[in-house]
Image (cartoon, rainbow, N blue to C red):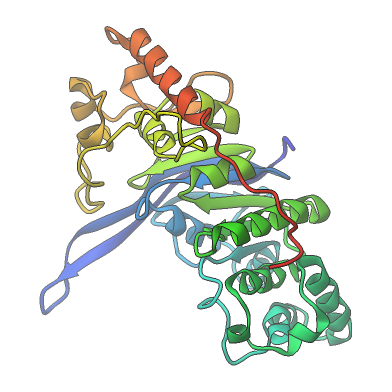
Length: 356
C-alpha cells in the first residue's frame, strides 16, 4: 500500500488561444497548472472539483491522450511522456480508463462482446483462443449474461452500459484504472450499484483507482485519500477523514457545506461562494481562489500560497494557515464548520451490485 505506483510532479497543460484570420496566438488556457500528486498501489485517490477545473485534462495526460506542456509523469518508476513503441503499448495495457458517458463511449455498431473484446484483439492478436473464456469470465464478474454479449449498446440501460465499459477496461488485466465521473450520468439507485461493483472489483483484481468526480458524497464513500482541484491547481490533499472532517482550504469547506443533509429537519450551515470560477486564460494574481474566498486577506491577492503540510499527510495551499493575526481562531471556526458539514451524513445506499 505504501509503494508509489503513479508519481505526477509539476504537471502543466496549456492550450493556445488563437484568433483572427491568420490564427495568431493571443494567450493560453491554463487547464492544468503545476499539479503534483502520488497514488499508492492498491489505494483509491479521489479527485474533486468543479466542472472546468482540469480534472479530465489531468486524466487524459496520464493516459497519454494529451501531451503535457511541462512536468513529469512516472508510472512504476518509468517516465511516461517519453515512452514510445512497445513501451507505450505496454503502458496502455497497464492503465485503462472508464469514461463518463456510458453510451457515447461505446461503438453503436459493435455487439457487447465485440466492444469488450476489442482491446484484447488489439494487444493480443495471436491469442484469440483465450479470448472467449476471458470474455465470459468478465461478463459474469460485472453482472452480464452470456446472451447479452450478442446485443448492441442501444438495447441496454445506462447502468448496464457502464458495466460493459468496466468489463472493457478490465480485459487487459490493468493495474491502474482512471474512472472519469463514471456514475454522474446514472440514476441514484443505479449509481450505488456501480460504486459497490467498483469497490468489489478493486479487492478481487488488486486494482488502483484514480476516481474523478464532483460529488463529495461519492468520493467519500470510495476514496482512501482526496485531492481537491480549483482552476487547474491542487488546493488540498489528504486522507478522506482529514479532508472531510477538518478541511483546511476554504474551497473544500464550501464544497462540503453544499452536500445535502440526510436529515431534512436538521438545519445546514451553507458557505455561499460569490461569483463564478475565473477564466483559466487570465487567472487571478496571488491565490487563484481569492476573488471568491470569504476569508481572504490582503496577502491572498498579492502572493500565491505555498504548498504546506498540516497533520501528517494533509497538504493544503492557503495563507490563512500561515500565522497571520486571527489565524488560529479562523482555523478552529472553519474546522468546526467542516466537521458539521461532514457529519451531516454523506451516504451511499448499499444495494446488490449484480443487477441493474
